[in-house]
Figure (cartoon, rainbow, N blue to C red):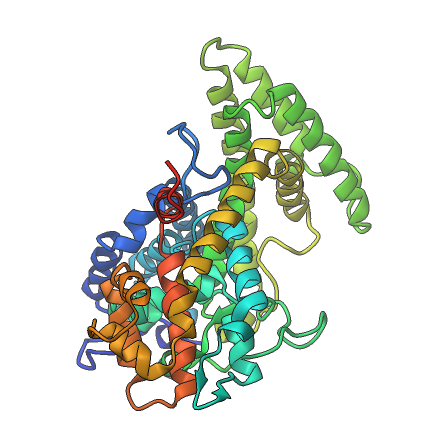
Length: 482
């Protein structure tokens, strides 16, 4: 096992980059932080769409928190490997800063592919294409064009994780190292593949779409460069996933309290009850957890700390609670990483670091369950999600004529020729230049079916790249609503 083979610094466009130079990953860091995709996260939903309260998290502030937790996990892993004298054996000696940078930037990027209005936005895109794709096929010489089933599955399987890969490679051309991109390749299934059944080999790693047909050749090159077998992950992605799991399960509840959906007493009672039920359900666990994973005791200590303050009681509660939660979960994630090092190195470890029916798992599951029952099911959140669903499906309805054009006519629309239909020309001019460029490059020399596939991608790229507010404003403007 030599992690140096997995932490290659190869770039797709630059073959002469020296391997494992820290400056290469620093270059990645600059490209990512200065990218438009990261900037847009400041106006994309975490839980509460179109939120005016700046204290409530956006995708950007959430990603920054994930970044910090990811860094903490890396530092803990290296400290333990050094203590166990395993750094040299694994090939990780001298690479702590390299890995730290890779994980931090993977954490910052992990949500860049999410559309407006979060996971509800994903569902809106997939529902629209599932209902309307067949009616959008162009008719040429009396024949209706159709996509093969695998490409239909790909188009109707929009996923934020897969869109992130498309963004960094095909749309923004960030020219990141393969290693850095592998850190956000969370799932290993191409959109053309059916979802595997529960219990099938690698089912967890393929439970969601990880990349589209449009990026399949690129992902194949990435896997080849990093010595990754098909269907396997990069080790960095396991750390990124654990950091995300730790961060959002606490943050969503803090935002719910900030929004007055929950108070501290109700939150504490709900978490204690949920945790107790989950521990009972994990039958191999003792009813009384060890001190470091005793969630009810953590809550009581945090509430006691909060009573010492008045105006800042809520913030003090979450400062204390986060500290109590963070350290044992990070420690446990690091232990799981090291304990399964061979499977993680080869990328076939088929579960998340914090999903193993342990006390750590019980804590994160309790936090997520309470967030779902109270924050995600809050009437305001559901009302905003319905608005978001209407906005996204409405925008796709408006842009539908661009899909219904035969290819020759769409070429006329792109060229803004006088004989091209006026509505389609006006709609086309509103599309992003970088999205149109990616489409134009992809369809060169392709048949009509593949061209239509990329035209569907063009609309998904445009709509999914919008911020919540821009999508809302665009819908209002095009629907002529004051």
